Length: 459
Image (cartoon, rainbow, N blue to C red; front, side, top):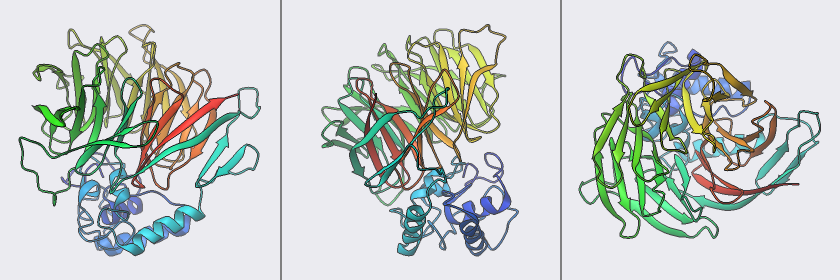
């Protein structure tokens, strides 16, 4: 994954077999761990076939592009996400057997395995299954079962992995990013409103995979910002479907974008270890964050702007969460505590807390109001069975929500570390989640090539 394209890439995989399976079949840490030992053994066998049996290739370098055999293989198996040297989690390779040139047998293996093996959270109490999703109620601090009702609102089938989902600031629209394009849907009806593809100022052939990794709307809803594998941040005029600005300055793929609530700037984070602030209206580069002595030592995976527009946060592959002052460009906080790469960060609605999610399978809540010397995290949330890939707050601050490679969405109470609800609503990793700013609904994007929206309420 993160490390597939370039030798000595980003980080070491968690175990030789898993790494080789990733290198051969998916790239990097590869794929979803779909169940128990039998499948892991199958992955290992496939990996040996795909990589020539080199189990020492912990970065998945040799195996990349050779994944013609096995789950997610297909012709040119290294294409797209599976080849991405920054995709250490292997999340982008998850669609390889499902719409990215994967073979039919690979797809059927994935689907059969998914339907037969759930995440392994047993117990009938508090479990309800509706159609193709299952809801597991967690327990409160007193030990009683929670009672959170959640139901599927819309399901949007895509032709490839859905890398990102984001609501407009008024909650009316939902944007998604996948291979070659971003799409905008009506959040309530599910109707497709627009597709943003290519570039009026660039010639991009359809044969070349180029994933839109990040999307966000400007606060006034006039612009859609996209970040992709072409290293360029694009600001689209939503009404005319044309590119207003092409923001060139990053050296590698864009992994995250966010817009400031005051509408003044946007921020982009990239595998080049830098976050860049851009003027939304002018398109000018305002500041570059990172590169300083205490800046990120590895790629930036996620960026977020505080509710006051005064701070920006970034999560990095170097396991650290950093916070900068927008006006001065000075690094003001550096939170260390995760044991693996940080893949997601989000400010609380009141701006007093910062939430992070990591490949160490945990979420952590950091207190921004504590003394400058304090880097202690307030709470750590453990319960996911695999990488935490996305995190969000509900607008009222009542819930923390996370999406994981274990294919679940989980709700957490920020006042305690208990898992309050788990939703198994995708057949592959939940790569991205977003909460509506205006309603009790959330959106999820997955390696199963679907984006979905969900409505929830509590009794």
